[in-house]
Length: 124
Image (cartoon, rainbow, N blue to C red):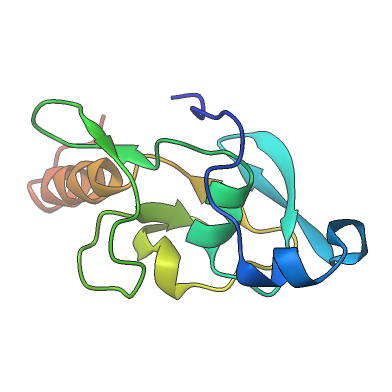
């Protein structure tokens, strides 16, 4: 899935008080695409500031999942971070070189299915 992005739809209050060009940035890779995002913020905030509009898809009907509560309760922002599936983007601070996969909840279902195949002795 390619990242669905547009203009920034989220901004921090610090952006209004300081010069944006002076803000420290880090490079991350989102679904194979290199992005430069603000440092010292959550993965969710940095992706929203970069204009990412779809974090993952709902497993049943494919609807978009996006951050909702921004405090770790709703799990709408789950993504894969550095090959670890099902991470809450709102609770994880972004760092340089981070690899983010936008499959979110689907990655947990797929890895559970892979584990079940291995336990049953199936090797594809």
